[in-house]
Amino acid sequence: MTSPRPAVRDSFLPFSRPTIGEEEVAELLDCVRSGWLTSGPKVEQFTSQFAAYVGARHAAALSSATAGLHLALLAHGIGAGDEVITTPLTFAATLNVIELVGAVPVLADIDRHTLQIRVDEVARAIGPRTRAVIPVHCVGQPVDLDPLLALARAHNLVVIEDAAHAVGTEYKGRRIGTFPTTREFSFHPNKNITTGAGGMLVTDDEDVLSRVIELRFHGMQRDAWKRFDKEASPRYDIARPGYKYNMMDLQAALGIHQLPRLDGFIEARRRLADRYQAAFQDLDALIVPEAVAYPARHAWHLYTPLVRLDALTIDRDRFMRELKARNIGVGLHYTAAHEFSYYRDRYGWCPEDYPDAHFVSERILSLPLFPTLSGAEQDDVIAAVRDIAQRSAR
Ligand SMILES: Cc1ncc(COP(=O)(O)O)c(C=O)c1O
Image (tube, rainbow, N blue to C red; front, side, top):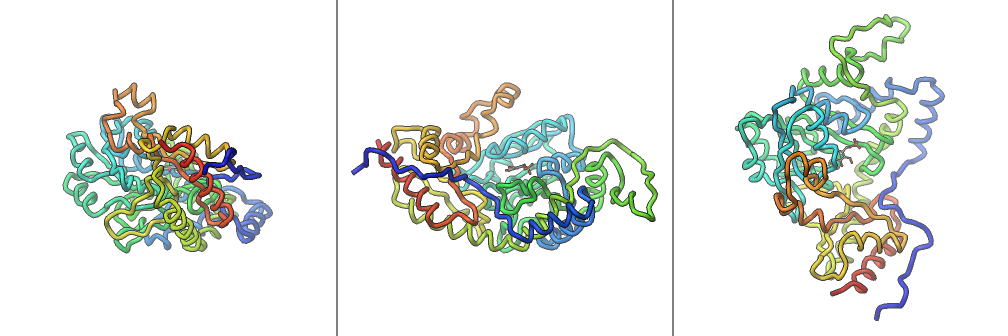
């Protein structure tokens, strides 16, 4: 029987919380005390550590993944008149940077079960102006890269992997980061490892790397920060104007100690996700996340069930409000990009143009998932979800 009043936690449980240890704190203090806060030796250390982890030849540390996606497009010479294919189920940054370089985003629908962009939809979206594809490894599972890369090769398209969710994700036994594309990772505080804010662009192409390095810091050449060394000249040249997209040592200080802990973080996330899956399996109110059909390691960046609208008297937004009323934090990843007013107005996109993305966009929510989520906290989430489901059953 439904109790008259729902159980409410004493304190608010966020949907995400970074796991920062004593090593990170000590490194941060070391950085502060060193007197060198901006890009410097800690960024160099984190960059080579990260390149080694993902098995890439080159990496460039940046202020965010958004900056990395922006520079990746510029470094590949993508701009006015070009079309770039991507998914509607992504963070706004993926589409925004396409607009910001003057190119046109073209959408390819997702698979509503796995949330990943569909390669047959990408194929359908290719036209004479298509220059690039930005697949997003959504929520920590990989896109089906083999057929996507084959398609891109056949049409001579640049592939920029938006790997913001995919630090530690594997596709057919290989880490995301090892495939021959330009790839971009995020270290935003809700990601699998964090530098406060930050991103890493990874490439095997020397030319792409040198353009990114030039553009990330005003247009100055490689290792511009070394101009303050005793032996170095403070003079520099600007061959073309750039941005201020560099990562700081203050940020890298966290990354240096987060990266070795990544596999442990993912294992903790997986255990928690398994527990959610078991707890919600029998619940009519939710469609639990589905695994991709090819071999993969899910990095469990997010735990994103869909609300089953036909089994409930409330919609997804009300479901989220009910969770918050019970002091449970919740995320929304994502409202499909083609439903934002800017994109709707500019391209005349309707929700139904991408039916699977629209289906997901109306139903998805992110439940709390982070390595230090305790069993008792997770029990509170499960109890709250079950309580809402029971009270709102159709
Ligand atoms: C899919 C996706 N792409 C890009 C970004 C941008 O990352 P950042 O916050 O590091 O700029 C995010 C961040 O949430 C994301 O989820």
